[in-house]
Image (cartoon, rainbow, N blue to C red; front, top):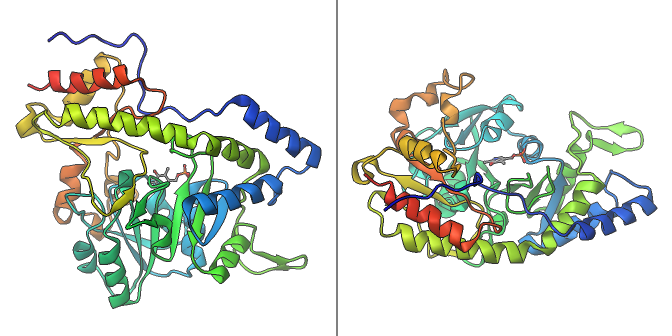
Length: 377
Ligand SMILES: *Cc1c(COP(=O)(O)O)cnc(C)c1O
């Protein structure tokens, strides 16, 4: 079978662009209100709309997901060590370091590629105050296992749901698990505000604390309580978010179709592991489509496939290579020893995320999946 290269590069994602008019109409309201930031009308509208869309009790909008995550750790008054995953984006451990907390990297569940509660429990010390787990690629963590672990040792739980917008487990929003859940609204995420993020929680007092911290910890006109920062989402971001939200169902429908195409074709390719289907997931996130390449069965390594596909103009990504525990700033931590993270080190060399966005045509998705079949050695 001859493989036809694409004439234009196909990237791993393409941001959702709502009709420009739906954005500019909202900007007209911003202009006539003459109000650009500090929890204006667009901010209020988006906060309410997302609270309903995500089916969470409390929600606070942020300028980006990283700042939101930093505020989450601060709002819970964490100290000492936090159990976390090495298989994530840099923002996850960085948010701990900025709070002078020590990330403790724990090994992964080989099915979900998420933090393994048993591996995490083995790393609990008297200094451990919390778990920061990531629903990586929209696969839910073992939320029951982590909750039981947290209860046994009196730990808080923060979930990084940057990949899990709209995910539901047992009919319940992923944002209702743990103490705080962070969402990222970066342009490359399913729902976006160009840059943005949010924290969800179930407790009104905690929401109030979060809102103070994201506004310099200003308590009233004459009182600043402590060390806050500026994490506010502005009106232009919020207006964009409202416009994106309007076309999100359409985007999700397209992505579900592309996922079906990928699954159908790739199920027949030896050495390709598809994202696991979890029967407890009642609504998928549809943000990424990661596959795993088992070189012994596929005949080539993930890295070779990544390079070969590039030659045919398909730009896949080796998310999240390298592991955070391999960054120079974390590699010296005792928990970063590769001997203690065998599953993470296997997975990080197998994962490849495929182009996945609504504007990708059925034909192109089919060609990409068939290319992966044809490149098997
Ligand atoms: C995108 C992302 C974040 C937050 O990133 P921002 O760009 O600051 O919104 C955090 N964690 C993970 C796993 C991410 O992918």
